[in-house]
Image (cartoon, rainbow, N blue to C red; front, side, top):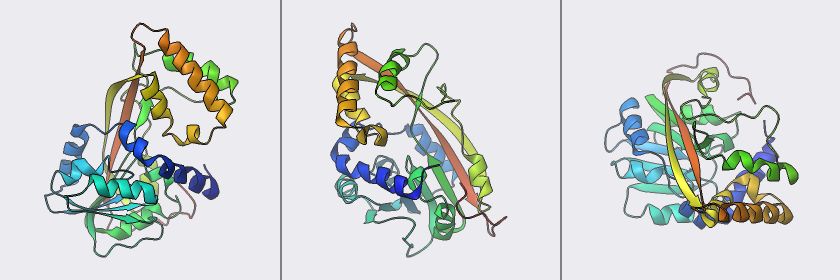
Length: 276
């Protein structure tokens, strides 16, 4: 588990690359938002709270469905891009941390897309519970790298360069296939504040040329904090290897797990501070 200081340092790196983040990070499948609307019993006009909206990748699809959304975003640069992208919708972007923020009125849904892991584990479920109306829902999902059968071998082949620069995979790291990503239902249940009602997996694929793929890597915290020599070595080798391919591109598999959980009227257990 990351320390508080490390978590703060890494999550603040995204604000440095707000424009490229919106340009190169993938969105999420429309089916996810359709399912979420049904699973959380949402109706147009309902109030939603998004935790860590970034540039609005997950906000826009829900704003287009007629929901009123308040977004809490730590980074000033990310918040500015999100406000621009959400202009004309019933969406407000507040710069701040969920850990410190309090809603003006209860909401129907609290959700986080590729952001929940940046919130302090000691308080995040409690803050979400406090923001929700009775019977409201929490929804969590995050984009992950998946490795379909017959998928592009590039990612395994390039690991020798990551090993060379001291950024190899940790012991025990796995390469999950689509539909086989680990889920977070145990962590949600352990909060004692929510009852998991649905877990669904989604997968898709995207093709990148060398520069687009390097731009994508430049939006990941682990690559952002690499030393210059590490990035130069890695990115130079990516360019060289993809240039030798007939189509000069790489196919990356993406997956995500949607978790939907209903707010308990009363906490089932007392969660230990710092757990999660």
